[in-house]
Image 1 (cartoon, rainbow, N blue to C red):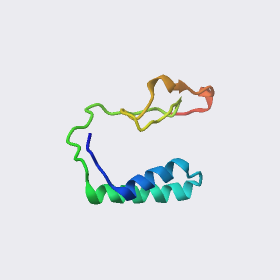
Image 2 (tube, rainbow, N blue to C red):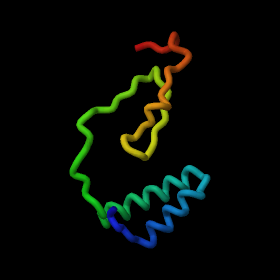
Image 3 (cartoon, rainbow, N blue to C red):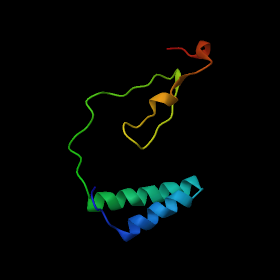
Length: 85
């Protein structure tokens, strides 16, 4: 836990949850990222050693939870004949 506390960041995170306009939500995400860079509440010094790559023949779902994808949501696309390597 970082115990990061910032009133503006808290407000932005609440607005992101209820904003349905993608362009407006993008602006909020960008401002939140600026705040995080300015205050840098945590420094990550570890990263995964494995590379993650997915071929275009798969449909998948990404997530903000590590490792960034949901293995059980990956499925082979139905139209494999139309895909060319």
